Every structure is written in structure tokens, then in C-alpha cells.
Length: 349
Image 1 (cartoon, rainbow, N blue to C red):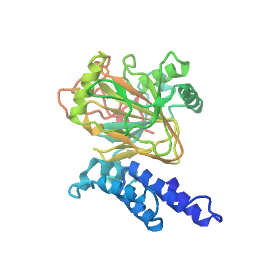
Image 2 (tube, rainbow, N blue to C red):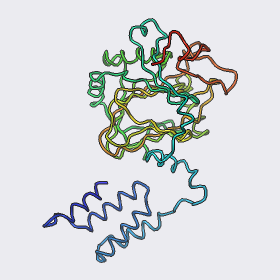
Image 3 (cartoon, one colour):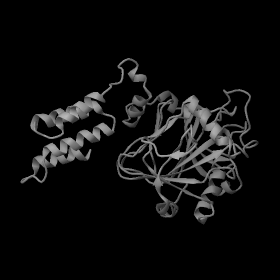
Image 4 (tube, rainbow, N blue to C red):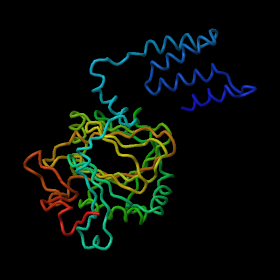
């Protein structure tokens, strides 16, 4: 944290250009805004020790004490917030048994892809998630960023009661939307996503671009009730719910910025020019709550992503409904054929 760094530098400065009391006050407030009220109180106690005449120290101690409300210790390890934080710190062990079943393959199920196949890495099978490697060029990422910069604004979420778009404390990134008609590069990426996912893009939402600076996070934790409200909100569009998500990593922060799935206890680290893909809905059309996800804070560097939300309409024959919730894709575009590692047209690499 910058305030910690300021304290370290202050000790080495001669003469000092700031005061320890000022830095401690700012540090306590930053910790409070992060939700770490206990630590904010400890820092403010230290402030009061070194500067008992500080005009705000006693009042701040009272404020942090009143707003402490520590989380109950029982069931703490099962708290979704704690799981999210542990995943972001890479403290959740990875199952060797599960990862040993994963593999990579060349996706060549279209005539064009016989010449230029996609490199696909399966990250998990149930529910399916894959990483498309190197599907954006350096030139494309730069063009997309330049197109988005003039349109960037504080990201919003839809109020489930009023239906209005509004800012939220848990979503502090900046975002913009790009249409296929805005530039040829956007339409090119839309066509590419059609070949990547085997899904129709006509009813998909516009390409959303998001920029995260240091400390920025995005939490998309959907409850069952929230899922019902989200479905109701999309019904007015006439395109159905969001059946799948494509998430392009256009930069790679030096530290942080991973995508975590709290229910599945898995983390995907951003890798430049790659795209993460998963299905949000089961084959029955019901929401898959296992795909609840969030973005970890960016600790060092800048994170640019672009994402596409693909809707149900137009996918009736491309991803047909299953009669059982247990029916699950084994690979992207699974219509019942053999797995890629056994398929003559979809070879492993």
C-alpha cells in the first residue's frame, strides 16, 4: 500500500517532508474503505499514541469502534468473501487429481480453422471453461483501447428494483461499449468469437471494454434471487438470458487482477491476448450459480479487458437444450461427437 511505503520513506528522510501522524490518518482511512476496520482502528490507536492532541484521532477511534462489527468467527472459512480473498492470494490449493485430466487441443471444426486453428486450453470440465490462446494481436488490443478511451466512464450495474443503471461501491472500474459499426476491428473480433464459441453473435451485447487501475475490483456474485431478477430484466430485450461469456485479457498486470470463481474455488490469472470462455446457463436453460465470479484487485500495473455477453436467442440448434441438468459440455461446441483428443478434426497439441 502507498501509505506503508510513505511511512518507510519518512523514516529515511532528513529533513522529513511530511508527518507520521498525517500518513497514519490516511492509512487508517484507506484500510477502512477496504473493509479492514480492525486494522484501521489499530493504526488510529497508534496515531493517538504519538499525537494525543491530534484534532481527529479520538473521534476517528470512536468512529472505527462503532463501525467495527466484526464478522462472526463461526462459519468464517465458508464465507464467500473470505473464499474470494483467499483465491486472490493464491491460498486455495489446486487439485492435482482434477488438473491431471485437463488437456489442450487445436480447434479445427470449421473449414477456415483447418488453415488457422485456435489453440484451446481446457481449464475445467464441470462446468466447462476454456482459455483460447493468442486470439488477439498486439495491434488489435491497441486499437480497441484507443477506441474505448474517449468513451470510458464509471462502470454501472442495473438496479434490480428500479431497472435503472447506477454506480455501485463494489464496481469501480471504467468501461465503454463498442459496436461492430464503430470500427472494422470490432466486427472482426465479433466474427472471430463466432468461430471460437460456435455461437451466434447477432443477439449478443456490444463489446464491453473495462479498465482497472491499482486497487480496482469487479465482483459479480449472483444469488438465486439475483439470477431471477436478472432474467426478468433481460426478458424485455427479447434475446433471452446471457448464455455464455467471452472475456479477453488485453493486458497482463504485473501483480493481481485474476478472475476467481468462488463456488468452484478456482482462479484464472490474466494472460495478454488470451480469452476466457464459459457457459453461464445449464443445458436446461437454468442459471448455473457455479459460474459466480469476481475480479481480484490490481496490485501492480494496469488491467484492460474486453468481454462479450452472448444471449440465448439464435442458439437453439448451436447449443440445444438438454433434458437433464447433468448434461454438460466436454468441449466448446459439443453436440455429442467424440472428445477433441479422439476427434479426427479437432487434434490435441
